[in-house]
Length: 392
Image (cartoon, rainbow, N blue to C red):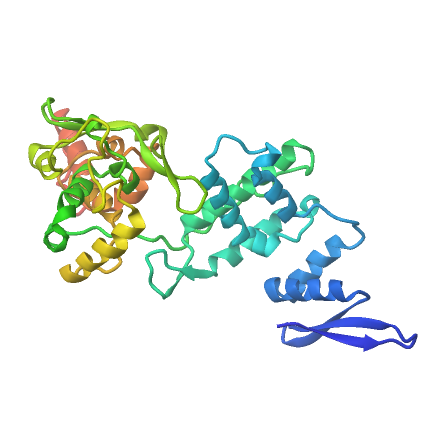
């Protein structure tokens, strides 16, 4: 940690010296103003001495430089009118993401001096940081490559907007490589573990749990389902996913809106046993699944009061979340040989790449099956190939 010390000059005036360490040696930098010394100390503590010196030198001589932090906050401010067409909660999430990632490392850099090397240095720094697990465990976790990619996307979008307004000459974040890093894998329950969870669940929510794993719906979609979206006259019965709960950005307040993606509007086929466990049919506008006191199920309340105790009673992986039922159902479909394109549509993924990235590793025999298929085809047209798996 750097420290600030006053120093009396021969003229009798007070100057301010910031002391720190770099490369194993003691270093220092002097300032006329105490506020500047304090600001530099904060930079040094956050970025390290050499990066702090570089950043400070870029700022010197500028009256009030437009920093990356200034611009990012303006870009994400609804009143600026720069970024439009997004939900208030999404805007709030983007700002929170920026503040704890690239603005922590690069926020004080003047916008028009930002370089590609700065972005690269931030990415390497971010990959070494830890954060608290979102699943409530105290053990710090490294940021996944997907999370860093999301952070980088916000930075790149902000710089692209600055470039379009001639505030900078180039978007230096565009195309910057993201390290593969760690990937937080979902939990795929075995059928035995799922049935343990089902039996351990409060009776009131067994039908809800069965629906989640059977439909592979997101929690926000399942809890927004109304009886008017359930078609029991078709064969097989179906549910129409046309809406989901969205955070408004005002505390925990939510509102109904469209599903997460364009492909999220979909029809899902079920079977009679699942429909029966959903309970007696209500009026068209009534929610299918409701809280104990009525009204929609709150995710945080459900997780704390019903899900976590059931997981503990079942003795299964304690990191399992309700969202893992979506992953679990998809893994069972893959095990039964359902093509990924069908699973993509059922899950409402915008891109098959998302489905492949999440579940592709669950196809251990895919290469063997493809080779066997090609062998059969080529053999039928007159080519003789060695048996799949044989030498040569």
